[in-house]
Length: 83
Image (cartoon, rainbow, N blue to C red):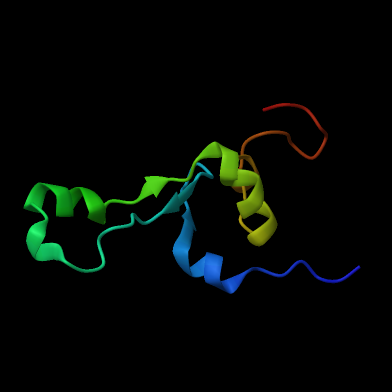
């Protein structure tokens, strides 16, 4: 079995939050900004969460993106007891 490789195009566009959620940039913010109101442009700068229906696809494209439970030090100790 080959190595699980990260899709580099996706890795440049998607980030993982501290809680393990995928975040993406918004569309419609690349050009023609003169016609958009400042409030709308501020909202377009903020990243948004990826829809849950697409999360399984992103897990396949980003196999090394860790989930929040794996990242935190809590969970179970080395004996298997819940902390």
